[in-house]
Image 1 (cartoon, rainbow, N blue to C red):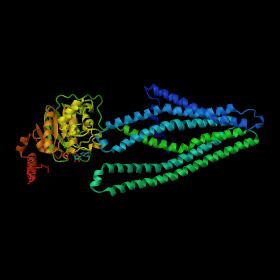
Image 2: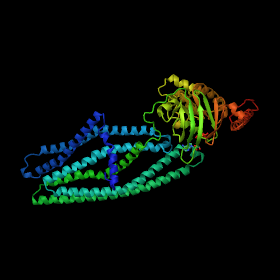
Image 3: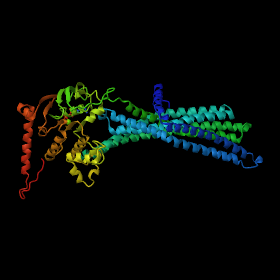
Length: 616
Ligand SMILES: Nc1ncnc2c1ncn2[C@@H]1O[C@H](COP(=O)(O)OP(=O)(O)OP(=O)(O)O)[C@@H](O)[C@H]1O
Ligand SMILES: [Mg+2]
């Protein structure tokens, strides 16, 4: 479909061109056969359609000379009926047979884009709204449907039919008839494309505000709890209202412009019809044409003008689809920031010694978070990273997992730079219990088994037991079939953390990262799980990130991170003896714990003497 500028036209055709391989899918003889059949049926339908007015004319002519009428021209009338039914039947069969080709194309492209989204890096996803991404796929695949259905089977064949009709009119009468038809259609198209192009602006505005209203509504409903905490329902409603008002205004303009489009279209067609009917009438008066010819001209015109009524819609849909497909294809063309080196080997895990060598990193160019971090976790040992909030502890975990690329220095596992091995093998070797656990909106069983979806059920339960979540689950009415709600919101923070621990235990990786894995648990449960974690991490290289120092005293080594650098390192005892930051932090936390314990002791019912242990 033409765009105003030549570059625009080229781009549009390029995008449509990208769909063409789906019309001739490789290694799919069945689909190829369907395409051929559909084309055959399309031609059959058009040929039937062209015969309809011819039979109609014959019937009218046979009937309009009563003197010579010996019998009802039943044969011609039947033929007329057959031609009509044939057209209908061939069209429907064509749609039926072609449907799988269209649906397969949507399926293939949708899946490919989905895969690609998972291949794109963390940074990409951090900057995007998930809802927006799934809408891109949804709209893009719908665009494919529109192009294949409307463009390939409506717009294209319409041109063929037009040529056929013009040829027939020419051969039956003279060249003035096809000329009027072509001029009428040209005027019609010019009007339609011009006005539709102008209307697209309103559509665009509508779409923008529609998306805006949508994101606001979703964001607001996701944050239901927060909205209530701050009593901001009215504020949310007014934000939504603003987006809706803008949409409403654009929609009204769009409707008004549609009326303008329709009026112009109707006027052009009527004018063309009137001219041609006058010409045919003149032919009858002169005796060069029969009344049947008059009907024939009229029927042909209506037959080719009628589909034009949809043209504005078809044009708009096709333009919109091109835009939607372009967005989706662009997404598919985004190169992942983190890619495997060509011929990258799998990580050869031998013990799992992790080394950070002078690592520099910043999320943006403007601020460096890690400024030359060097640390080593010898195979099978446990290293704890402590430090104030925002020091870059979680960042270290993300870099080891290669969610981001270091900007300086290198990260190695058993001597292999993690940039040289496949991401898949690297990530298979590492288990992470992240700081903020989110769960899939499915059952607890599903979420635990997610660690290794093909694990036998006993192992899933075993992992749950190790993470101290099994008993809790068994106490629920539906047990492991209990739904956890969106992002796991129906579980408490500590329960979610234990599910996350269980699924990492089930994954059974060579290297473990616990990022504040027990921070949401009360000290009693925490001790339980610490013991379990200690068991799990024996013999495995383990990185523990923690605020509560009491949870890391058994680590083989502790590093204190501050200002993007390792400022202290050593064992718990060694660091205490060094009287540095760690020692100060330790004493502060000890003091806090003592206070807490004393408070717990005082909360005792004076009458019954029954102690109620609250965590304060
Ligand atoms: N995706 C991101 N984009 C930009 N900056 C980020 C991003 N993630 C983290 N940061 C910044 O990087 C710094 C280090 O973050 P990091 O999450 O590593 O801290 P942390 O030491 O784990 O803190 P905490 O103890 O609070 O979890 C912070 O200042 C944070 O604001
Ligand atoms: Mg963190």
